[in-house]
Every structure is written in C-alpha cells, then in structure tokens.
Length: 322
Ligand code: ADP
Ligand code: MG
Image 1 (cartoon, rainbow, N blue to C red):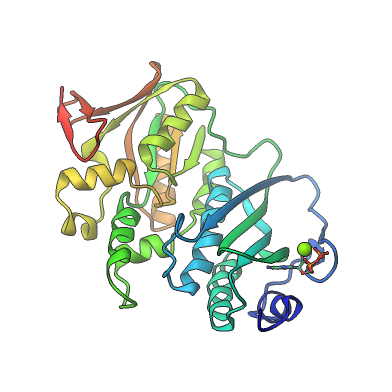
Image 2: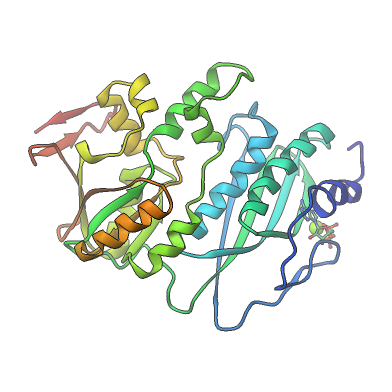
C-alpha cells in the first residue's frame, strides 16, 4: 500500500470527513477497542452485513455510492427492528490503498452516517479483494423492538415506498459508464433506510422486516417466524412511474416480488391501526401501501384483482393464472 495502514485510518476514518460526537461514546478510534456507555433503560440492537465487490455491488460502482450503500443496508436492519442508530464499526478489505477511492468512499459513508447521527467507533483494515463489513448498534426501549415474529391472521400487510426499482436500476447500472444516474439507478446505489418510520412503527406493527431479498422471500420470513401464511394482491403492489415507464406490467410485478435490494420495510399491523399508518405516511411523506393480509394457512399466496389465486411459474419471468 502507498500510505501506511495507520495513515489511511487516520486520514479517512478517524480524522477524515468529520464524524459526529455522541455523549454515549467514551473512546473511539485509536485504541485496541472502542468503549461505549449505553444510555440506561435501553436495549441494544446489533446487526452486521458484509458486501463483496462483484457479488453485492458491481466492481465499477462509484466509490461514494459504495460507501453510502454499505452503511445503508446495515441501517435498514436497524430500521426493521425499530431501533435508533448509535455506533458502527467498519472492517475494510482493500486490494490497494487507492487514496482517490478512499476519499470518495469515506465521503459517501459519512454523508449517510452524519445524517442519522451514527458514529464510527472502530474497525479493521486489511489487504485483499474489496470487501466491506459493517456492524451497526442501536437502541430500542426495553421489549419494544419489532421482530419478524408476531404477525397474526387478519393483520394487514404493508410496504413502504415503491418495489422493484432497485433491481431495475441495477440492470441499468451494468450497462453504461459514469453518466448522470437516473432515479432507478439511485434506488440501487443509494437506498434510503426507513429509520424514522421503523421507530414510529414500534407502537403500531406486530411484525416487520426490511426487503433485501425481494418481497416474496421477505414476507415468507415473517410468515415462517410468525407461524402463519400471507396473501398478496398483485394489483396493489406499489410501482413507481419510473419503473412502469421502462417495464411492462408482468416484468414490474416480477421485479417487485423477487428483485430485492429495495430496502423498504414490510410490516404487519391490525386493521384498526390503518389511521395511524396513514398519518405516519403523511408525516414522513412516504407512500405506505397495504398489499395483502396475513392468513392462517402457511405459505405465501398471490391473488389477482378478482381475488383469484395466481400461480407463479417456478421458472420465474412471468405469472400465469390457475
Ligand atoms: P489492532 O491491531 O489493535 O487491531 P488496528 O491497527 O487494527 O489495531 O486499528 C487501530 C485503530 O484503528 C483501532 O481503534 C481500530 O478500531 C481502528 N480502525 C482500524 N481500521 C479501521 C477502519 N477501517 N475504520 C475505522 N476504524 C478503524
Ligand atoms: Mg485490527
């Protein structure tokens, strides 16, 4: 590496783009470990996600977006738990100490970190194929975290934002060079972790998950953990005008169901919570759409506008009617 590991950490992570100060951080970067002093009467929520170049994002992606997205997908896990971000650590494996790359990466990373008042408190730096591992820690009031379990038959199933955009954006990303990014491309490169909505849902939702693998898989996780099933109405899936502008209806639905990478929240709430959810949607200026209902029978089922069961081809790509 050109610069030493210690210079690298100091320039880009300890003293680089200024990290926020927190009163619950005793000792940050520079010692053998960090020391934090959690506020009393809170539970800590802990999650970690690793992103491997060429697997979780294209190798050619803008380093600023790589930094932003690496933290965003982790913050999305805190959002899905209804947690409030506090600290994170960063284990970075780099092929070389490319300072231009590091500068941009840290800019994107701290842009999002500062926005959500989460402090970088430590990490590790090694040489190897580009891999970014981030661990996030956050707070919830005792016993109040949102879990995947807790959905009961009759609960309505909701999603935030629009589905399928990120998968369509990734397809576009693979094509062209560094041109001005479109809405769909930014939906992949800069997912918005729904932290405020997640915290708000603690008093509203029975169960929640963030949509990282695609709605079908992630609703399936809620159903499985809750010991119930789910019915999704295809015509209710929230699709952006940008997505419907570039794909036909069948493709849009397929992307919304299986595309993944949207990092929206999917949650289940009793019907009487509908007014509170509408209020939340207005307050945070984010569409929150009811897309179906929890059912007693295990499994995830799809319905058309007539309420008829729709069978999904295991080969994917299209839907056909039973
Ligand atoms: P050690 O050998 O004790 O693990 P390191 O040299 O790996 O120490 O790290 C020195 C300090 O720099 C530690 O406080 C560590 O948390 C921090 N650090 C290392 N790499 C990173 C990174 N990528 N981001 C943030 N902090 C880092
Ligand atoms: Mg170390």
